[in-house]
Image 1 (cartoon, helix red, strand yellow):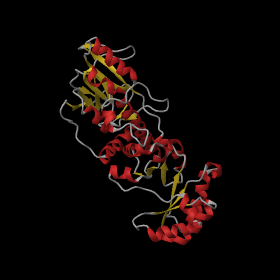
Image 2 (cartoon, rainbow, N blue to C red):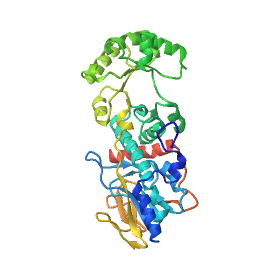
Image 3 (cartoon, rainbow, N blue to C red):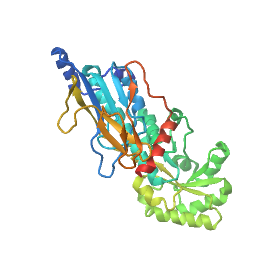
Length: 388
């Protein structure tokens, strides 16, 4: 255990210490009975929440750090693949005791990462072409901030707020100023003038507008003072003062436009999710999304044994035997088949389908190509039009 924070160390995770105790008791019993057997385990989501019919597979990059230490074989979807209920995303083949104690950690890595990436994808669909940024790291334990924002990014966000997260992804962090700076300097315009004087010109001048005064009149004052330097107005109005935020934005847009400031964008943040984004699209030009990303509902993967000792066997409610997942490259229709299936034609469009699960770890080498967060994100964005 880390001496400063209540977190497990990398060494403890890789040693299998972050595990439910019943896996340790299972190990003791199987060893005592000399009953360990080769098995095949599948990772699937059996059902999604009512308002969701699909997910984005994420977390594989971290899960690989565990899998690459094990004497097993692993098949996996590429990270960033959109999948549906009961479609296997990860398959492990090996003696049960060689990997069983890692079920807790492996599930944790892909459940949370996939939940965040999926929520980001939903917000991406809702925002349409508008810029979308992840502001949610502050709502969670700081040591997982980079994980949160990486998965928000691959799910469809255009940028992230925290410095280390941006470094991990390989992009510049995005942000304006906090209310604290406006409060300390005592005036919104004075704050923006100081920002303009001290901060690199390549950083867009975005004014946080709602610290002291009415948003409409403050927007007019800032726009008149900064002129062409002002890129956007950011509204982060607290709920107790918000009223009808859409109407407030419409008022600001009208007042800016009739004064010749049509180029000034409206950037909205605070309490947003995919539903509220859709409501604000009429006026908003960009979004900063926080808690709904960082606290996104996890996807409830389970790890199920489907073959034991070479026999087809699974618990009730689960189909026995290893599966393949075929997908049409043209329309993205998917079909689950027995693993013995060699080829398949799409039932929807007649196009040839290809197997999505590829050998990722052969016991010695990680075979899936290393991809950047930008490449994974690009794959997600290519798939979204088919499920939007």
